[in-house]
Image (cartoon, rainbow, N blue to C red; front, side, top):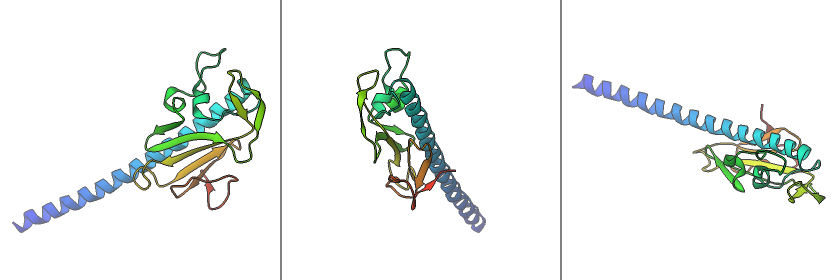
Amino acid sequence: MIELVVVLFILATLFVLATAAVSRARLAANEASAIGALRTVTKAEFAYAADCGSGNYATSLVVLGQKPPHAVQGYLNVDLGGHPTAQTSGYYVTVRSGAAATLSPRDDCMGNQTVSGYYAIATPIEFEKTGRRSFATNQGDAIWQRFAQVPPSEPFGPPAEIVH
């Protein structure tokens, strides 16, 4: 009987350790997905600025998801560009005008207003459960992180740090 209790205790301990490892792996995967989403948004913003925005940037994910008249598809797929705030792997992702951005007097090729800078963020849907870091980027092309629910603010700097 004692041997059975010892075996059950060992199995319970291994189960607890495995559950913790799976949870950490899930957090890391969610955070990697959020970083990937911001890299995708950055590439879409640069393509948009070069192709449709006359050197200026889109003010939302929805604008980046629209199909320009001369193209086959939008700059973002429907998963990211279908809503003002996208949900991806435990994170909310959104885009808005940057802190020092100015409105452009010229609209883009689809009639949308453009800005001189953008600010894209990814925040955990449930802090500590779906992610422990928040992320942000802008036309500076670096992704910044902060170990908090609140994303790094512009201008970027401490307490935020660049993601390596």
